Length: 109
Image 1 (cartoon, rainbow, N blue to C red):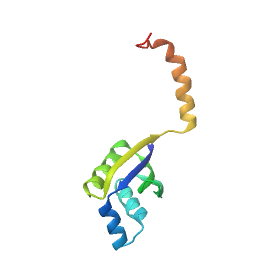
Image 2: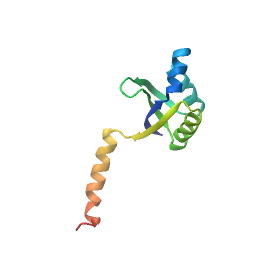
Image 3: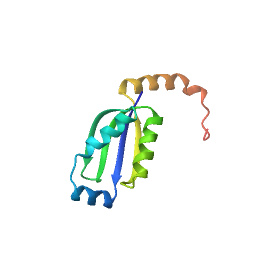
Image 4: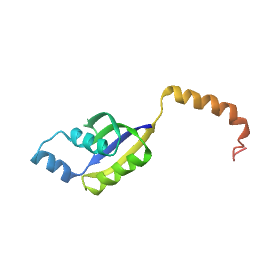
């Protein structure tokens, strides 16, 4: 299972709905994620970008399903997803890449 940072920008219509009927949008997101088998680590609202920011764990397929469902709702302008790895995994990648770098011929050399 991978860790994903998901940032989804709300439409003006979504904000109108939030004013008309305030609710915890994090709970709605958690319910969707749970139905897809995603594990929710945390959910935030970004005041600088007007978006919901979620940290979830699962597969690329599960995150793609969440994107399809939420974008089809019309409540979002865009969804950005970043797969995250730990610094320990990054160190392993550095070590492995350093050992293999000599085998790569760069196009500019």
